[in-house]
Image (cartoon, rainbow, N blue to C red; front, side, top):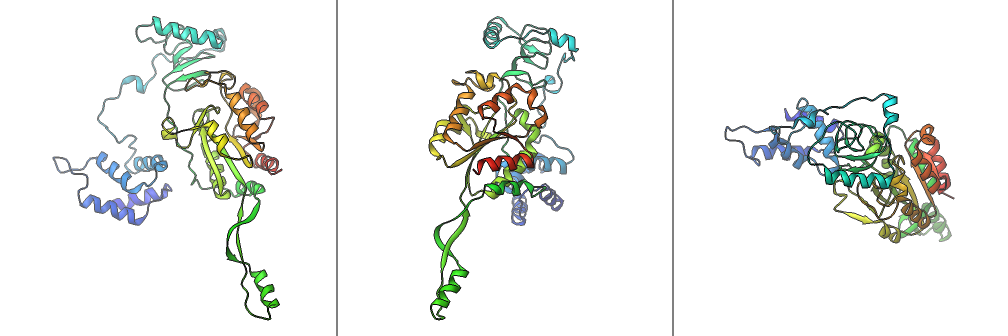
Length: 395
């Protein structure tokens, strides 16, 4: 039985070795996780044991969970399966579709009015509310809550549906981009190779055959070995990637790009941000609030010879770019535009790669703002776009 489980994990592109599989079998035989009173194992016991033994890097947890669920006939959640799930987790009460006329009639508030009204509602409201246009709740047309419609509001909990929130009052979890994603085409790598600049640096540890032949001939046939340092690509790349929210639609293509970049550039530094860069970034999305990297420190740490590349769809509320406190996740002291300008001034060679189709850019106000801040150095995530961006960065 577990042999098929092993091959299921391998087919899901998990780096599981035969040695780890045998270790799992030994752990089962040794009762590392003890059986229940009736002598049987639970699915929870096996899940945690198998993940501990077989998964070496937490970035593979999602792949493992999907493969585990597929093998055990659709198990979606293996931890605490007997826990009762609240009904409002499973369905959205009073969710309704509004006509275009009804949507147009819903009032829009400016930033200051929105924040002041939210504070007033928090002071006045005493209980849960569903539907309506005033209170914090679910459904309806209120600018506060989730599950309804408002052209510009604060989403509090729940899941996004209309992508019109200017701020999100919720702690969301993102996952790192998978740098082992297999590329379906070599074209992305070929496009990135325009940025390569080779140099021989370091200790001479490789045989220079041509020079050895000439030196030996000039030395009357006595062998005269000549060594040279390894030829390396000395281009340095600083990669800043948007993650979460609307970027979820582009994960596959961004992972392909990330894989290609990691294979082509030895001097690579990368960080994540959400929607717009502010005063901190992170390297691990599971610990993005615990392990922050100050943006000022990033600017000071890396020299101007680094090529700066942003990857993101630039699709957000304009407040997130222009307004202090406009971030959907926390109250930023300075506007995102300030940080984008500091980064582009610190690294003269920069470009923005946008996975969103270029045909819709003109309809997104935030994309136009980012294009201005990038001095129009925004390129689509296509082969032609990558070639144009690398041609600019290589100058």
